Length: 340
Image (cartoon, rainbow, N blue to C red; front, side):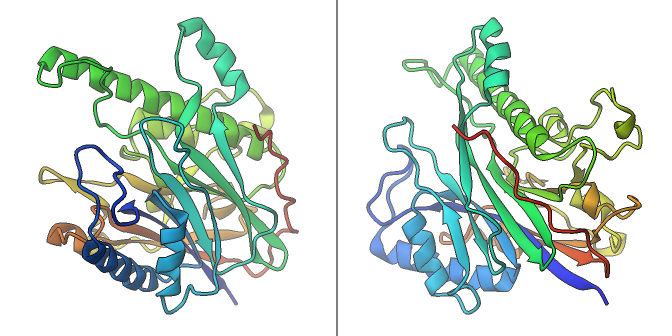
C-alpha cells in the first residue's frame, strides 16, 4: 500500500503588516487590505492542502502565524522561518516552511555564501558575500523511518539591480542593471549548489527536496546549475546519471496529462512562465532502482493569477504528490551543516 506525501511551494507576494513600507514604490497595506490578504491566504493554504509548504516573500513571520491561525488545517502545524534583517538594505523578504509532519532536527538558515565559493569569487573582485534571501533548511520526517532534507529558496529576481544615483530611464544603464541582477542570481545558484553538494553524498542515500521561487524557468542556466545538469562525472558512482543530480518534479511525474497541461506559476506582461519549482533527488525518481518513492503528479494552483485580485498573490502554488513505496530506506540522519 502506497502512502502519499504532498510538498508545495508558494510565493505569497509581500506578506507584511499594515503600515510597513516594504518597497519604496509600493504603499503600505491599510488595515483593511491587510485583513483581506490574511483571509485570502488562509483560504488558499487550506486549498493547497500539502503536508509541507515552503513560502516566499515573507516580511513578517508573525503575519504568517496569524494566517495559519485562520486556516482550517494548519493551526497546529510546525512553522520555521526568520524575519528579514533590518540592518541590511534594501530590505528583502524571507522564506518560511510550514509542516504537518514532524521535524527531524532543528531548522537552520544559510545567510552567507559558502566559503569555498567566496574564495573563487574573490578572484573576480566580486562584492557578493550573501544570499539575497537566506536559504531555509528543515529536515522533515515524512515516514517513521524516512527523513527528507528540505531547502526552501528564493533566488534573486530579474528586476534590474541599479547602483545608487544611476538614471533608471537610461536604456544603457538598464542593460547593465539587468546584467548585475543576472550575475547575482547566477552566483546564488552556484552558492545553493555548493550547499546541496554538502547534503548529497556521491554514494549512499540522502532524500532531498528543494523548492521555491527560482525566478527563472527550469531550462534556464541558473536553474540547471542548481540541478547539477551537465556537470562532470568524475566518480564511478556518478556514472548512472543520478547520484548528485536534482530533477524537476514536473518532468518526471508519472501521471502527466498533456490534454490538460496548464503548468505555469507566474504571469508578467501577458507572458506565462513557471518560475516556481520543486526539485527532488534520485530517491523520488521513478527510474532509479532504489527509489523510496516517485513523483506521481504536479499540480499548479494558479486560477487566481489571471484574476489579479489586490489581496491575491501574483504567483501560483506548485503542488507535488509523492507516492512512497512499501519498503522505505532506513531513516537518513539530518545533515551536518557548515552553518555560519
